[in-house]
Length: 73
Image (tube, rainbow, N blue to C red):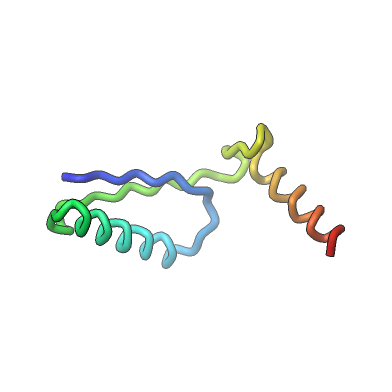
């Protein structure tokens, strides 16, 4: 029974998470020649403050990236 774990930053619509489960399971079933009913997917969503990007919490890093884009544009 294949198990695929995916860690992502929170904030995506439920429909996107559902599609991720479906498409990852289908791909794994195809590649491993396994019935899709045997494939398990586990998606963990973390808040941006729990992610680090370059040693900075993601919520702060994203704000900095957005501010630089505004300054450039």
